[in-house]
Image (spheres, rainbow, N blue to C red):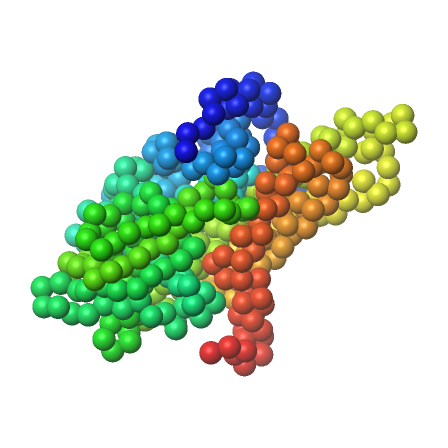
Length: 406
């Protein structure tokens, strides 16, 4: 589907200058390095120029702008923590978090495109792949020449990925892959897919599947009310012949894809703050401009209560992410710690979206403001890469030592 050019130009003219200002009530900037600030500033400028003027129309038309992939590659949004020798940015995890925060401030779907590429495609190839695989795939993924996707979730196995039925058999000079994956970001346009499947002993392995392999198709999912500017689809494998050199040799078992999800969930924890900040900033501006009873609604106690609570929750989440980023840099962050941040910050952002919508009144449901788009997007973010309830149970297991699910 092509974007209506007139609508896009009108929206660009109407939005004009993106006036977003990031709240920093506790002076977190003082803890950032100059490099961190430069990276954040560069991505913020990119979002203001390349995403916010057009995102409402992309979402209204359920259009994924394929040109954004190469642009993300050019600004270093793909695989920021991957070493530079493979095309990555060689950055630390706080830099990665700031990049995800700024992109999701533009739109969760745009951040999904970037975080899937970096955390769920490039990360496993770098972490578990052979040197030949790293050199073949990572530079093209980092530059945006290739787009990737991650195949774990199945139609009947979401929160229980270990029950997957997708499988492969050793056929001598190749593997024969069969099965299907569902709710896969980037899949309709992906050039490569990192797919998790069981071998003949029921051991889970990662396989790199390339577009063009016979029997491999990627049907698109239509009719979404959320992440409308992100391409979502399926991965279908019908006797796909996968070369043996495409097996990720570094790690097998369910722990391998779960390690990838830890990296992605970390990025989500930062990204959700971006959505929350955008809604807070919009609500603050609107409250100061909207006149009722001969005064701006910002002067009313209940509006000030909402804005105060928004700023409080954003500040708490910023500090949470800062410490989690330090733990990630030290290699000390645990899965339960990452789960806590993902769950808390997405719930926080969703609550802020809902309060901001009330401050905007009826205007909050229109595309003139970003509120409803962020709210619908976050309804997906609160579910994908570990549902809200599953993250509670991960924490519950950590607290009690008793797993509530197998």
